[in-house]
Length: 251
Length: 126
Image (cartoon, helix red, strand yellow):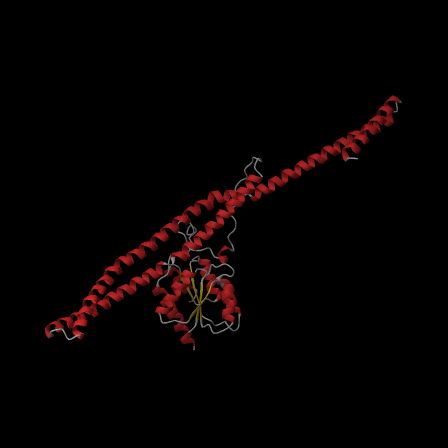
């Protein structure tokens, strides 16, 4: 027998008892059965009200967690845009440094190649004893000049290659920034899912205070993105600033 | 001199390795975070540690603290090369016993200067 039919049977019995009491004019019994019926009714009402309150509370709590949504839209997403702009400018800089270096290296190596080819052909001629002395004198002078210009050229090439090497640092710096943006996208995704799950409850909570960053610096936050991470003024703009700070600490 | 370079980005490890080679320092080993670096350090034979801060697994600052807590490694020179540039972080690293701190992006000249400075102090200490 189901719960409902048990309840119905009980109520039916209570009602019958009430009718019987009324017919027999037993005032005391009438009062008792009336009380019993209304109490049963009230307790069901309170039970339902209790359930509703619990549901309301749960909905409020899950929405409170979702204050993160507001923080995301107001702060993190605009920050992410700045961060991605930083990635563009870093990669652009690296590409430009590399291309500029190539532009400067190519004419130097080309000239060296031409010089070597020319001298090599004449050197062969000399080795085969087919070169008049006057021509040999001219070639000797050119060889000396070639050594000198090669030295200058190679120094330039080495310097430029070093610039290309250093420019590759962009991969690390932009990688760190992109990783943070990926984390953000993941966060947004989770919050969207949660928001859809509880949508229909139409109220928007006040934005909560920004989460504390007390221990954030221990984990590491990646490069200082201009306009995003330097707003609080607690970041070092250059190696000189770092050196000054360290020397103030007794380094 | 055997140097351990710790960075989660292989590009940066290669850059540092190249720069060290230019400075005549050819004996370089690598690790990609603190967790893989620590056993290499504990195994002995490393004379100098260059580490990034922000790495998965174990960060550079955690690695530094563990190095300083290990009696065998307590005197190992440690140079941080990192993009972390917050004041509190540099103070934290200094308090943890770092020997030098370079922020990325950096130049070959800066690396040389900091290395020279650390070597100078070690020589003076002997």
